[in-house]
Amino acid sequence: MNDRLTRRDLLTLAAASGASLLLPRLARAEETPKKGKTLLILGGTRFLGPALVEAATAKGWTLTLFNRGKSNPGLFKDRPIEEIHGDRNVEADVKKLSGRKWDAVIDTSGYFPRQVRASMSVLSSQVGQYVFISSISVYTTPMKPGMDETSAVARLAAGTDADAIDKISEGNYGALKLLCEEAAEKAMPGKTLNIRPGYIVGLRDGSDRFTYWPVRVQKGGEVLAPGRPADPVQFIDVRDLADWTIRMVDAGQNGVYNATGPKDRLGMGTFLETCKTVTGVKATFTWVDEPTMKEIGISSDEDFPIWVSPGSEYGGLGDVSIARALKAGLTFRPLATTVADTLAWWKTLPEDRRAQMRAGLKPEKEAAALAALKARAKKAKPPK
Ligand SMILES: NC(=O)c1ccc[n+]([C@@H]2O[C@H](COP(=O)([O-])OP(=O)(O)OC[C@H]3O[C@@H](n4cnc5c(N)ncnc54)[C@H](OP(=O)(O)O)[C@@H]3O)[C@@H](O)[C@H]2O)c1
Image (cartoon, rainbow, N blue to C red; front, top):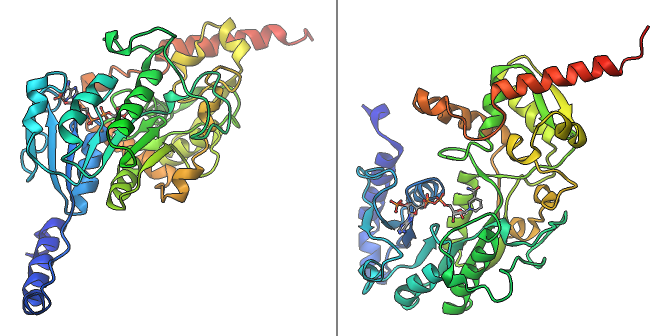
């Protein structure tokens, strides 16, 4: 019987028995039991949102999600989570949040400063803290290794009206995220936490940028690998980001933080070797340098996700300083765990989705590139 109890059941039982034991003492000392925080998430149902829900739920917090009800409807239908449906771009919908109080709000769905201002017009007097999920893309290019929170940031071209922009592009994403951060800080000075994640990876990642690598290595054989094994790469398991964000909210910490990982420098080679160890397959890695990539028709950006060319304008993306976040308690699960769990999650997806890997080299392109490399090597060999 007992082994059928879930962890949640056990926690509920423990809480219940603890409460009854405490009752006489509470009455005497007029203490109130320590209660979890109330948290509003503007979003919550795609990728980072569900991980935040898990992390906050584990702390026993009371959750409200505000979203349109379009992404993964019913995801939390069996949970005691309040969902308010509305479009954050519609004033009347944002007003649905009026007259309520939350200890904190986490904004995972803000991309335009006008969205943050609209949320703030209702929430700034109703919440104790505003957490904005920003991006490492707020930094200007060229991104240099060692970028920290004081590094130069991206700005829209002079004279551009941010409120007239309605489409996110690679060229304006970072600058708009920065304006969102600034709008949040302006509305709630000193009570805003701006988190700048690097690549977020793992369960529910719809981009496949990270997933491509474990899945490709698991297929075994000769794997085409970018650059040099020592090239640094950075990313953060969505659960590590969520757990730390919730701990920061718990501690009422504000400010601006880069948030990526791992703790110590990780080379692309170690990343791939970890995928090999976790999957236990026979795989070899053939490293291709950038000039050769170009010659054999490989795009360093599109064909090799997560890896960034150290010489490119995004070169610093593999070597961002996370010293401030580490000091504030950011921790990481082992890379092998992220790889194994990502593969396990990938397996649960429908076959037609798995057949459509959204990032990385298509198998035919990889095979053609490997053949081209072999032909070049043969040609370069001096005749006997
Ligand atoms: N992925 C990365 O590698 C990466 C890296 C750095 C930073 N980031 C940032 O991390 C954040 C993560 O986003 P996520 O998608 O994982 O968060 P999420 O909270 O899991 O999902 C996005 C939520 O926003 C809701 N939403 C979208 N448009 C809305 C609207 N107009 N009104 C109300 N709700 C709306 C969606 O629900 P409905 O569709 O049902 O409305 C969904 O619940 C983003 O801000 C992104 O810029 C991501």
